[in-house]
Image (cartoon, rainbow, N blue to C red; front, side, top):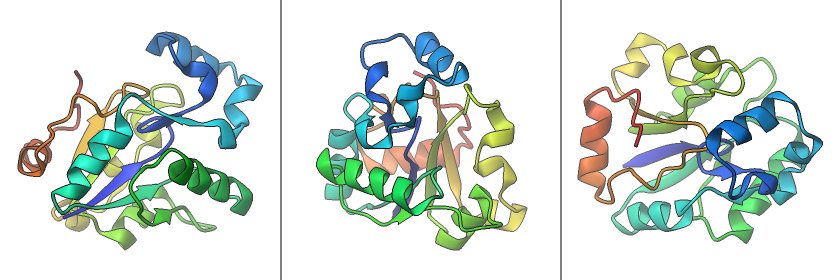
Length: 173
């Protein structure tokens, strides 16, 4: 099973957000605090490394989708994933003229895990709602609260996929 996991906001956050309430992190993003732009200083949210490793050990192919598009920023996110020990997997990003949906359709995972983009506009900024219906029929989706992490998702791949099959567009705690 191929899992496409969004990076920023879903499994990574800026280091200054550690220990803050979700509402404070969203406020930092909306106020465009300069620290959020230091992509090299991003850190995993909660126990994302352990959760993704658990799924990988069960046979999941983990791949990632970043919001970054500039080569140096993409490389920063790639380095953060590696530095923090997230499972190896290809890091996808949007090429000029591409949307997140285009990338997801190109990658064609069985399951997409992304956050609700609360700090930047909500559903209009998400991936799954913009995927073509034919591709949506093949891609399951789980949406988690932005900066809420993935710790609460099932450890077992079968249960995770079942959650996605139920059309769970809001896998809140």
